[in-house]
Image: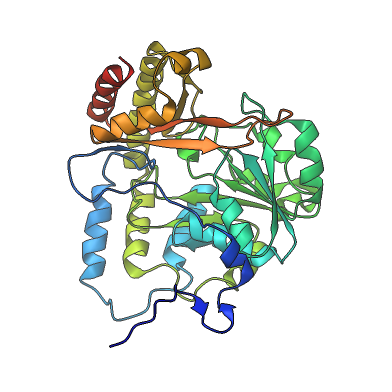
Length: 382
């Protein structure tokens, strides 16, 4: 059989078949996911502990049930549980196939070609990709070197923004902004999305008081949560949005009919019912986070005080000049089957000209995993 040598998506007589917006972007690149055993995997912020035993039991029961029937398209049972936890009515809740799907639905619902999407930088680069997919414009709100907001940069962009994404706590830094700071980021003619993927690890997570802002501002705020981090369910793919019912109704128009499957709904329902299990794992991670932070600082790293389940570690310029670079440290650890995330952000700081930032984002693993990392790191630095 004869096959074509043309790259996928290209036509022989009319050039690319893809939209120009798709042709010009690179797309988001997830963290490495080695499939073989034997790795200490501290690169994609998964929870190192298993989910509640109730989750496994619920999935098994669901798998033995009516898989030939479509799931509830509105996820009614889950919405009732989540609404009770957050003190809202069920019509304020929209479940998704991970909070990343909620981000996609939000961008699809609010952004027309040419409209402006803003987000802090360095931060979660998927926001940029989603804006590109819609043909929207995006502007990075460059943060100060200490990860604070630069008002001279922030205010003009927020004034023009149709959609502003703010991860709180932020990634890769792990710092959290105060509620008062977040309130100032609501665009006057747009929507603020507070992405709380790591909120359960923070001292004071953003909560539903944002949704009752005076003057109607609360109708332009969306909170996101995921089950991938604190609930130990990254492999299940489940998250949800919290927003005013009018916003939720609009988002439902652009979602897939059955965007959450029977097994993920069963798992999420069981997980949200076992808050004690989730909170116990969160406290274990917070304790290990403090130990990891202290040990990295003792090794000469600068580490941001993290409110997430990871830390951002950098070496002072003087130490980098006399030793391995961040990229070299990442590679030498990888050679030892220890994965951390090397990240590089060009034009990052709110200085003139903007400076490049690179460093290591390290997920908080079990105590044994962190001990393995620290032992290897001493050899790498030596």
